[in-house]
Image (cartoon, rainbow, N blue to C red):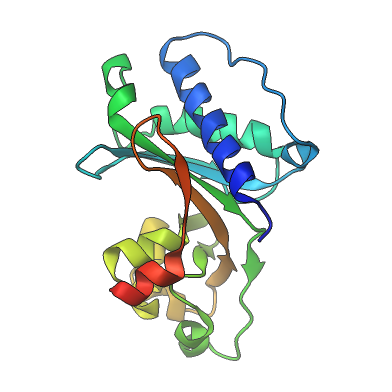
Length: 205
């Protein structure tokens, strides 16, 4: 495990404070963090409605461009204004669950031929980035588990997220990257954050 449960809880707390500050149009408060939060890392912040569990926003940075604390704050702010949804309102803040995904760097998946991609992907472990020219689509590993997708469907959905045809992963011009995520989610709004074990969730599907 790259991050401890304590790290995960702190990451969720930082994201929650960033959401609060953003919707109230005030500066993000200074937070004392361990040194590893100053190291560059990819991160996503997801907002889900509570108790319905509908997606309300999800924004992040797959590559380690920013120190982790900055990536978390920027991702949380972005999730409040995910262009797929209306901006998050003050009266919604206590009715959303925050989930933080702490990412490894995406690695190019090297296969002999595109048909081999599904066998090289592990649902419940891997997230996907599909790229072709300027088009890019990313899906976090928990998305495949939540929707009950197999590897081929996961690839197709990532292609469509990139604005490509569902079978674009079979094109030699398409590049597929995998990454892993350690995921921490609030149990209740503003409540304790727990680590999600995707392998166990996938086995139950």
